[in-house]
Structures are given as C-alpha cells and as structure tokens.
Length: 116
Length: 114
Image (cartoon, rainbow over all chains, first blue to last red; front, side, top):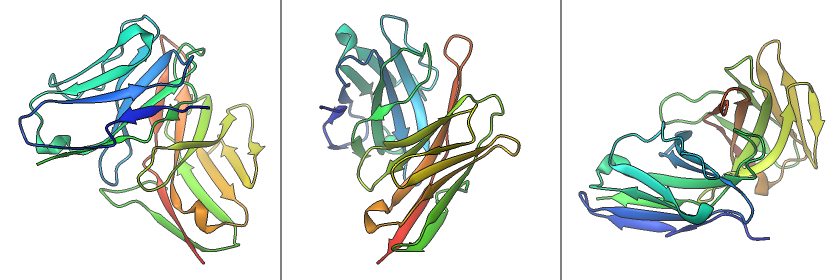
C-alpha cells in the first residue's frame, strides 16, 4: 500500500526566501508529525497534528516556522525567511492516532533542504 | 550507544555475523519502545517494537531485548547482510497526560563488510 509521501525530495533555496514542504500521510492516519534531522543528528520534533485538535507546536524553533494540515490529511510546513541553519532533512510521519498520544509512526522519505 | 556531537557511534561487522546494537534510554516511565532503521537518503523505517511488560520480542532475523533495571534496549540482527547497513535508532514512548512523551535516540551506524 502507499506510504507517507513528501515533496519535493530536494530543495535548494537562497537565504531569505520562503519554502513550502508538503506531506501526504498514509490514508486513514489521523496523526501527523514533522521532524527535522540535521547531519549526524537525531530527530528533532517540530509539530504534531491529531485529528481536529489544536496542533502541538512546542517543537517549532522559531516563529519563521509554521505548519498547516488541511482537511485532516495533507500537511504543509512553511519556513519563512530561510537561514543557513535551516538546512536539514525534514521528515514527515503519520500514525493511526488511536493511542491518544505517541504511537508507532511511519515515516516519509524526507525533503532535503539546502539554504545557500 | 549515544552519540556525541555530529559523530554517530559505528558498529562494523562481517557479513554473516550477528550484530548487537545498544540503546540506553532515559525515561524509566517509558511504556513502549521502537527500533527504526534509516538507510542513506531515506526516512526511518519501523523494524520492531516492544512493550515495557516484556523483556524480549523476536521478529524475522531481529530480536529486541529490554532491561528495565538498567534502562537498556538492544537490537540483535542475526546473520547480518550488506542490506542491513544503515543507521539504527531507538525511540521510547511514555503514555500519559494529554499525549505523553516521545524521545528518539541519535542512532548507531551499522556497517557490514562483505
């Protein structure tokens, strides 16, 4: 079956530009997560959506980062006025959303963002 | 193991040997543990999980061992193959409250020599 998909797979942008990253979760998964992974580092949690509840934005590093999830499915992570330190792999994951919290997540392939 | 700075600990094994990858988790209240495999250029892939009321669980060529006394989790891979080369990391989940707590480890790089 189809897994989590992300687009674009690679993005090169100039410092100061805005970027949008897209995530399509597994069909039927109500929970969606965004992470950032810098070279050689572990996963850094950014934001979590569960159904129609208000998202958990506690991991967003600055107000330049925002995310939306429309219709409970597709999500877009937006980074405004990108900085070089934003360069990383941005990973999206989804889960069934039955546990009322964290549960086994299935990851997409990631978007590799390079800010020049 | 735990990583320091930008360098992941590396485990190098010969093809056909067994591999043991370790993870020292931090939260004694964690209820659930997951091992992920991440190949170069790909997202993490679920391998196996274990609940805190178990101390061992087996899958296909993989076994996870949980020692709650010393907060240690290990992943054993039998007859390691070149396709097993990847970064492996553990995740721990504590259920409770509005959504609980999730912590990912930084990973161990497994290198399989043919």
